Length: 460
Ligand SMILES: [Ca+2]
Ligand SMILES: [Ca+2]
Ligand SMILES: [Ca+2]
Ligand SMILES: [Ca+2]
Picture 1: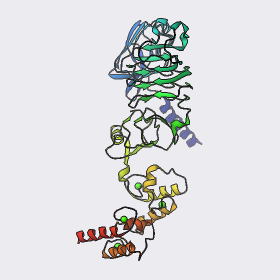
Picture 2 (picture 1 turned 180 degrees about the horizontal axis):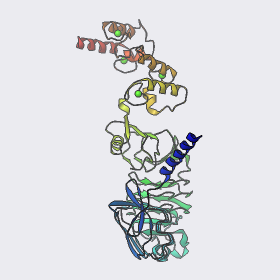
Picture 3 (picture 1 turned 45 degrees about the vertical axis):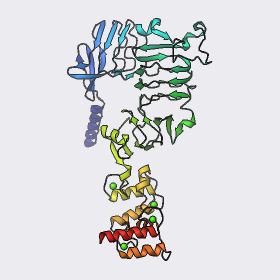
Picture 4 (picture 1 turned 90 degrees about the vertical axis):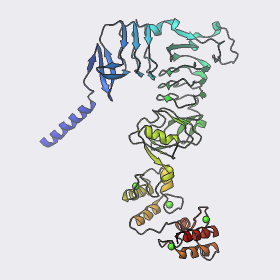
């Protein structure tokens, strides 16, 4: 009993030590915590009215203003966030009713929902703009004329609020072209614009935030930059485009040449023709990435610890894997039978083949290539048996040119090939076919006999 109690206690202790945030740290009225070696500001108790949020605290770089960190601070009138800080948490400045001047640096890549909601800046109607219809790239109200007098437009349908180069919130209908130069589309920015049909996101945009277009059910046409962008969670969830089955392929949501979101748990096989893989698109699953992909967001995987990239040599995918320390499996150099891709052929591969054969394990794209040891087109129990025989030194020979399968390539094999070419002997199975088809054209004929003859002459 006592022992059980001790075990229970230490279990609780372990749980507690995991759950416990690092002890609160302070710097000039700020409270912050360390996350992955960076400072995240959690609160401010100082009395400044004009505040600069520093980029370093006690020698540690500040990366984020945490959720609600300055919430309801009614003394603040002006805030400048220093260069280097990249993340503004949800409700960070919400309810700072005296805060009329806010400056975010261009290093910001994410602005959370309601980050500046109910600040003096937000509440000042003169900060809300209505797009000038006469300017190029302006809003098409929906009927395409572009000449509707402003008085006739319901203001709430075309209002938008920018903060520096960041689009904070917008209500629009018809077609909308986000201003060139815009850097960040804040979380939830377009929510509620259910009359929006088409949107153009210019190349300048680095991030489209969480839920940015969530529920824009009429939004069928989304034009994205010619590069991978960082996408927040559910950025295009429940849009017209998302709900259109034509934009889905094998559980993967695409917009044009962009891969937006894969719902596959084990493996994402990226469709041929894809150029860009956006932030969050791949989750924590393995990915098979074709050579045509030219750009992948640095946040494409939400977790890279167990994810692998399967791709081809000298492609962007291989470079990306190296730069982000992601395991890379070269599809051009798969070892036959090495179905766990660790470079050695052993009983672990046999166990995995058995597991595939009994449908207890996922049969991946690459396993379909290197797991079919008897070349019958399927990966199943027969391949497990074939591998088992190999591992015990009893497998049939697979040496190219060893037509009779005795393990060595000799004149006897040449004579057998001549017999096959002249229909005096037959190819028994796919393994034998592989051994006999020296020029890999799928047939065993005189060309293979000649190839073997040359090989034997060369080696004699
Ligand atoms: Ca292996
Ligand atoms: Ca097979
Ligand atoms: Ca032989
Ligand atoms: Ca041949």
